[in-house]
Structures are given as C-alpha cells and as structure tokens.
Image 1 (spheres, rainbow, N blue to C red):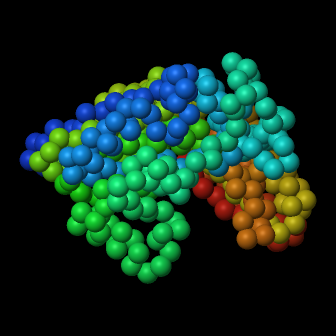
Image 2: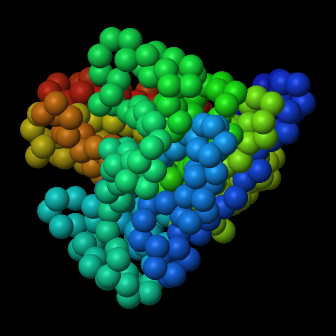
Length: 370
C-alpha cells in the first residue's frame, strides 16, 4: 500500500502522534543468544523477568505476546540464531515428518540436520514453546501473580474472548499472555510493559512477506504499552537483533523499514517490485494433483514465449494437506500484471478443455490481492 502511495495510485494519510501527545514506549531489544551463552535457558530474558517483577510491585499490568505466526516447521539454532533456508528462494525450509527439510516455493529438499551448520551447536530444532508453557513458567516465577491466557483453546466458547479482555481491563489479572489476538488494537491504560517472546518466529515463515509481517506484529505489540498516563516499556526478545525488521520495529520507524524491505523485494523480484501469480491446486489424489500441476507448469513454459517470465514449482503448500485434500502451488513471476493476466486467460482455456483437471480444485491469486 505504501508503494502504491509512492506511485501516486493511493493517497497517503499519516497519524504521526499518539492521542494526547503521549510518548511512545521505551523499547529494549534482548539478544537471546547472549542469554543462552551466560546460562539462561529460560524463555524469559533476565531483563524481562526484572521488569515483570517491577510492574507487579507497582500494581501495573503486563502483556506477554508470543509470536506464533510462522512457527510451524522451521528449524533454527538457539546458540547462534542460524535458520536453515532454501539456497534458491531465501525463505526458510519447513521440517516434515519424513525427516526432510522442504522449500514450499521451489520444492528443494535436504535431510533434517542435527547439528547447526553454522556453529556446530546441538541446540538446533523447531520452536516448541506455546502459551500454556509460558503460563506455567510465569506462575512458577511469580506465584502471586494473577494470570490470564488468551489463545485458541481459551476462546473456544461463546463470549470467552470478551470475558477475558473485560476481566483484564477491569484489573482482574496482572499479566495477560496470548498470541497475536492480544496485540490488535486493545487499549488498556494500566499496561506499562509488553514482552514480545520469540519476536522473530514470523521472520522465518515460508513467505517472502515474512519481514513485513514481523514488523507489523511487533509495532502493534509495542504499541499496547503506555497508552494511559504512565509511561510504557517493551522488551523484544530475539535471535536476530541485527535484522532490519526487528530494529525498525523497536524504533517504530516505518519509513526506514519500507526502504530496507523494498531493497530486498527488488533484489529478489518479489511484489510489489514485480508481479506474482500463484496458482493453487488441491485434490484428493496426491499423484493426480502432482501430475496436473506439472502439466500446468509445462503449458506455461510453452506459452510464455520470449517474455521475461519465471515459473517456480510445482511445490507443496506450507500446509500440504487440509481436510483430506492435498495442496500444491505453481508461482509465475513477471514485470507487468498484464503479462500474467494474459497467461492466466490461456491457462484457463487449457484447463477447461482437458478432462484431467475436473477432479482438481484450482485457484488463481495475483500478488495485488494478497
């Protein structure tokens, strides 16, 4: 959207101050690699523990946000922060139950690793901490603290979402633990501390928009602190404190983030620097789906001619099976959307006249609609 503003397609309207000119929270970034190096294996940094204790003593509230977006499957090292990535696509590889690491953009595969390829540490694997584990740790560290948890399990019943938020707003708890649902626009004047746990999980999602989504989540999380008369503070815990998404989120500087992210998008040819068409396929028969998506790839190669068109895949989706339907995708990249629209029209006619596609569900998504 900001890119469209720069191209004068959209009008840019900015909100530059908080209500009442209240200051933005003070933000501290904690390197969890250093925490491990000096013997702290807890999910809480020493700084965050100290700040939570301080808030409890003052009768102020804390929100602990665990960034679960993008956590599924990626493999990272707790000692040095290394993440196993695809050599062709610059997105993280996903761990599958068959012992392989797979890229969901191009299909690249490699065996699961048991020692960090960068530093040799055995502390490498998938992230496993969830909201329940965090709740247990909080209660162990601060037994007198009143704790509320908000996640998929605690909000299943009717009105449970509102009940948890109302209780917290009324001072019924000292600490609220939750996933991204707790950082979306809530206004609690007595919240003076926000802890972002595993802040860079979404940075490793199998998606070229991972940096953008990480910035969004962290700026939203940080913005929950200090919304009343008392000043706010946020602690961002990360294994990648040097990443521009983390640094610019800590500084609440969208302009700086945009410039860095656009450099990356231009370098890799990702939207909005280029146009992307995703062709999603789903079917009950995995072999038949694979064959159908391969036919789509071959047909696209045939009709692209001499135009600057890149075809990626077919590859399994990040979630490769839902409700007994196998899922795959082919990605088509081109400088102009008109080129992709022309390819799609021809492909739709090709699919229509070939009976083999009748048991396959197909969907076309342009990058502008993402």
